[in-house]
Image 1: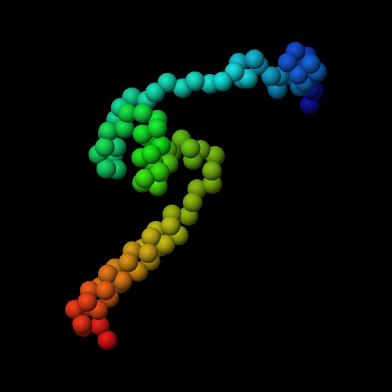
Image 2: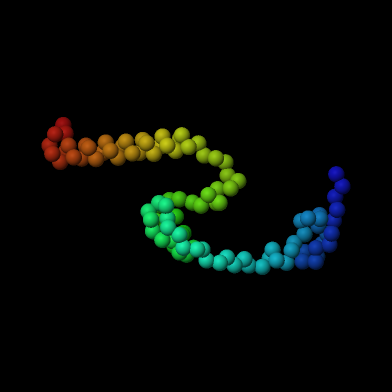
Length: 105
């Protein structure tokens, strides 16, 4: 396959065509604020990016846009882990109730 090269004035060298540095790529990117919306998780209104970051951290979730290009997780393994954790918590709760009532031996 034939390759083509062009002069990159920013790097001051020849580079393969299509890989040259554009000046706008070097400038900082400024994102506007988000439109307020109601969280489907807990019903709170999220009206800023910082509020969204705090909300995602509090509920241990991520935006689906952040998952692009990642390998899909084995959801069965995650569900099993969650189920085992839930069962363990339930067992501990019942055991603590039985200990406090004096029925645990």
